[in-house]
Amino acid sequence: MKLVMLRNLTFLVGYAAVLVLLTASSVQAAQYGTGEEAKAMLERAVAAVKEDKAKALDMFNKGEGGFKDRDLYVWCANASDGIVTAHPTNKGKKLTDIEGKHGAAFGQEIMQSATQEAIKEVTYWWPLPGSDMPLQKTTFYTKAGDQICAVGYTSANPSGHAAGRS
Image 1 (cartoon, rainbow, N blue to C red):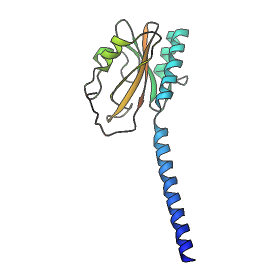
Image 2: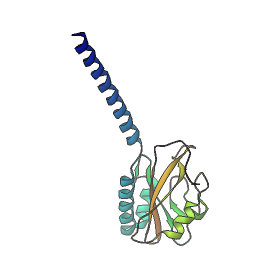
Image 3: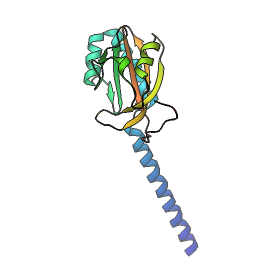
Image 4: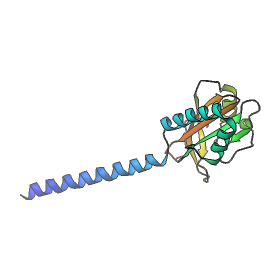
């Protein structure tokens, strides 16, 4: 009898531990957007730019119209001169001058390789808006008319270490 009770208690404790771990990981995952959500937001942003560029850039800068969700936001730059036209903190800066927090010249890479109708990606280290701690970020980008637009998603790994310089 005691053995059965002990086995049941062990099962319940183990089950509770699994539930706690699953809940914690789903809360962590919900804190950040996913790659699929970032790419979908970029596709909506491209459609918005093609429909009405001025209105779209205004929405991106204000985070309206579904273009701001957790760590996901749209940013754009002029394809001709690289001046950032929409971004939470870098509006007006030159894209080619923007580097990841570990030195990666991702702005230069995006300027050189963005093309119409092709979504590409680049990975670098960048802090969330309002934070100084860099996290690994992968950004999807493409050309939309005379704009280069992008949406990045953040890795939940705040260790600050990467295999390469980013």
